[in-house]
Length: 333
Image: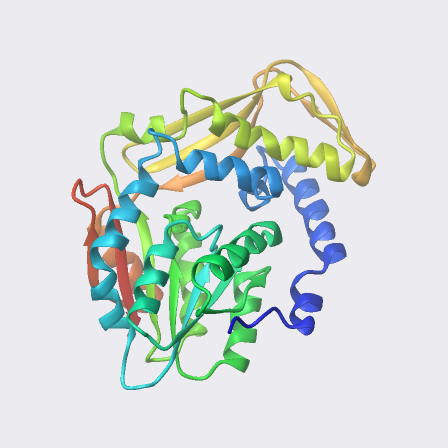
């Protein structure tokens, strides 16, 4: 039987006023910075969720197919790693999205009568509703308990309520959205919330042909462009902004030395944008960028170093056939 969201969790994690205030504050901070930036976590409103699902279907966006191949190939291997002498474990997914890839693993675990529950965490309540409906329909025997909000707040709550082993999933190369130093800080905080018997399965996009990488963020259909511009539209809709989306264009870059793919929105003219919720206007020079997102690419040596600095041991790396991507299994020192 599927366990629904508890009312207390809804109050704690789905507080519209708190989330909106955070959005307002982060937009004000980012647009007053030099250079300007917007936090990529705000890409994911209802339209943003839809556009990202379309991105994952693109031929250029190789990441989804590569990680899906890894999950399909190694489902049984993962099951044996995740299970231990205990009768139950919690599969906790950070940034679960709509569960498109994870569903392969969930189905395999359920079909093999694995005793586990699924606890997806995501900042988007909309996408978690889609995910929960999908699990209800396709894997009705699976216990699911979604959390909307901050990863660490959710993990603290889970640690209070769930005994036994936790297996954390952090897939899709989301770790690449951090600068290296910020990734270490994030992973150390994650480590502090894990017990000795817990495990972490984390996805990394690997360094490869720079053109292949750049094309993944600059598709011919313009969906990635629309995904980035949607954040300006969200500011217009929710904060009373007057961004003219046609006055900005999407500009992706990739540096093969440090492995950082970055996305910007570039102002095509000198302009002033008003945001009523801030009671403030922002001046943009012609050609001025707004930094939108980083997607860092790794190599196996750097993955090992990252794990070590964050307090983890790498147990095994799982690759797709092209070795474009890896899912890396970690445990605490």
